[in-house]
Length: 135
Image (cartoon, rainbow, N blue to C red; front, side, top):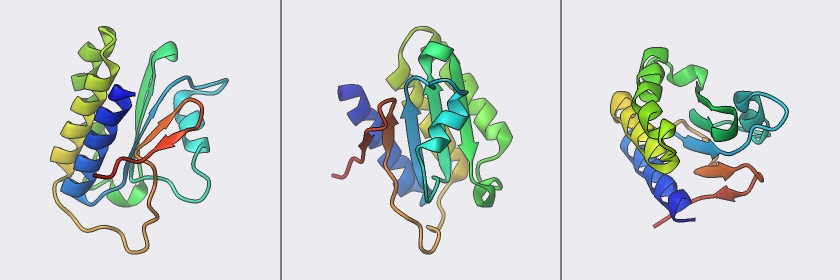
């Protein structure tokens, strides 16, 4: 729980810094790949940036919405994963996610929220349970 709180706070900080919607999925990917499984948890709206970490499958993926790819490029996502990789190898999932979010929010920089954006959870775990941290 402490890790999810730390991750949730990091997501909130990234959202405040960038005005983008970030979400983290940490857990098992089921029978599909991690990206497909994480995206299936969102029915009506998807976050601007979805960071997927599936430790059992050894998968990390960052999915960005079409409208923000000029702010969070594929190269920036690759860099974030490279920053996360050494921490993930040591089993420090929470710290890896925090480092990845920090990098992505620094690259994206400040911006304006999309009009009509739907509030989404900060953290989704493998059971589909969502956590939104507000303080």
